[in-house]
Length: 128
Image (cartoon, rainbow, N blue to C red; front, top):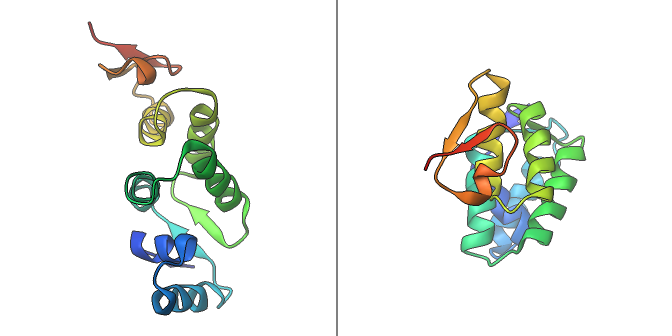
């Protein structure tokens, strides 16, 4: 299994640079599988939302597809799955959902925040 950077994932997803998208597809097509770190996953979601204007339904569809694909493996896969569930049912952004789930997985709750949406996540605590 090999790892990829954010720009490789973005090229696969948006194909805005045909030459780079082709190289990314070729890399993926080797069948070895791709490992995605938490940092790369969060950055990819941010780039898709902030730069490409993807809305939550598009992000959820991409995350659902990626997390169920045999081609991808994720660092902290259980936390990623739990974060996806939290993201789907909350107003918090994906990065906050994932951070809260990683804290839970490591036994470090409550997860302190000033953000109301994040504070509504299980195990989170709004600081007042």
